[in-house]
Length: 240
Image 1 (cartoon, rainbow, N blue to C red):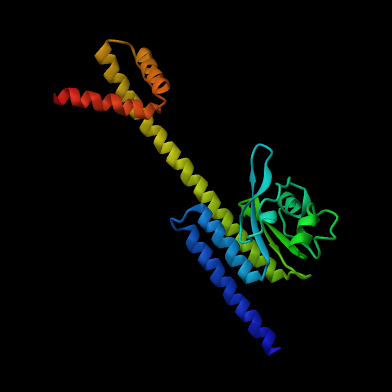
Image 2 (image 1 turned 90 degrees about the horizontal axis):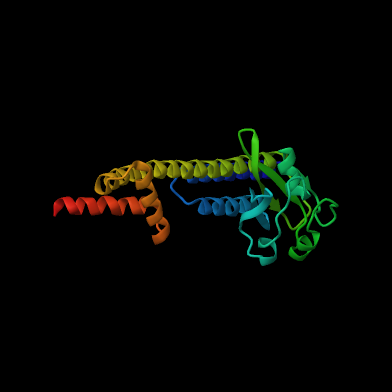
């Protein structure tokens, strides 16, 4: 009994440490790929999993694609995408709840049993990665022996999955903010460049913008780069 309690206490401490490490990564300036790699590596270590993988919805078909795994197996890493509602991961995504399978090689709904056999995989738990009330992907853990995942283990995995989802969402929001700031900056510089061209060539605003567009296409440069060049040339002309 004492041995079991000590094991459970050790597992609890490891779980807290894992969630803390991931939380630190989420609020840091690390690249998203680095955070996701950290998630699968630490989770695999905690759960004693042979393979831990993180899959996200991607592409026009909105299929689950492996974005991170600690596995070095080329067969697993290049596993084809899974549709929502398909196989174990797809169902966890669709129903937004954890799904466990005792033996994936015998499960009729598991899509790639041949890969599981080749890798010596048995049990699987797949938990959805939730952002508020929507799932953006799944976190999977495979073992080499049949294993019934406990309620506490599934709760831990759900916490990890949601932390990873938060990291992804934060990265997307930051990217959108950067794009928005860039758009405002580009618009300001284009407006400035237009006013320079209007004065320089005695043309209207529409024709000035067309000139900037033409230079952009002819020189294969962005509108911002063309506008900056026009502004710099005007500054040089003023100095001279």
